[in-house]
Length: 207
Image (tube, rainbow, N blue to C red):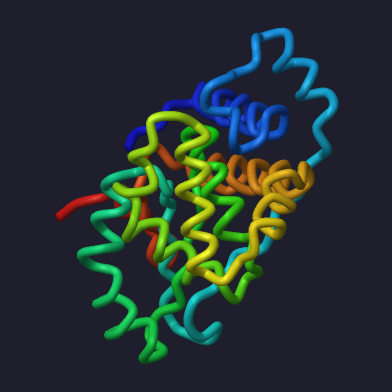
């Protein structure tokens, strides 16, 4: 999936939509331009969150993936290649892996909040569910249906309904995730997903 520079403003608007309407409504009720500006003024200031590392911190190779939970190419990489990467390189201490989320829309942001909802220890487990079951939870035709599907993902990861709602309604969490995305993706000049940065060298998606 390809980005362009104005996309960062679109992503911010999607975040504001999620803040304003919540996961059950944002898909079907995007705010008008004036409402977006007002919500932006009321939203808390976000901070850049630290990366969540999978593997040994001392591994000689750092493998960063910029990915969106709504990106089919990211799903394909995860489903077809990630297990081999993990088994042969991450689990053996050769590589430390970092996933950095990209938000194309409010739905992707809801998924990103859910991935973080169980804490850092559960992030990659929830991420795995979101990618392996992407076609199922994204099949919802309305925002409410997609939100219901995401709740099922969270339940499989051991999250209670109240816990998920609290995460989605936490405006500071949303602001932090969007700020983290915009800061990292802007700094690394990310133009599409998936994009990989291996020991500082950018590698775009390829067979």
